[in-house]
Image 1 (cartoon, rainbow, N blue to C red):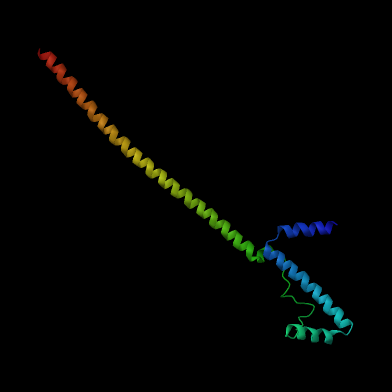
Image 2: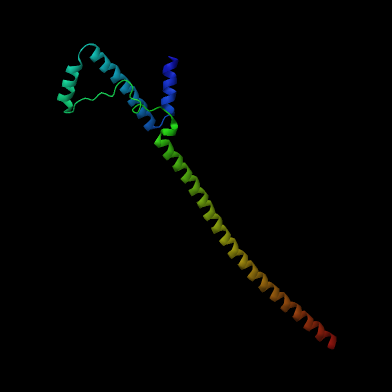
Length: 145
């Protein structure tokens, strides 16, 4: 029962590609056992005849040690994980670029606001100078009187 639970947890952690690869490996193992039974019971010829009849292909024997065919569950060889990692990397890059664009827009808005405030400040300083000049003129006029 614990083995089934472990297999279930492993399957849950695999990508769809990893699941298919694992199922294909299990299927190949079962086929090697079935072909072994056929050969042990001298049914190899009948098996080959039926395969040729139904598939129109002759069966070929990879042997019991088909090393290149059975891949492990190593995540490093799973192209879906590599693609997922690349997509996550691109998503992070896009998020950084979007934040950069928002910062640029905020900076542009702040620069426009700062320019408007500077113009307003210059206008207020001119008004203040005019008021002071007017007060000085009145003070000068009052002295003359």
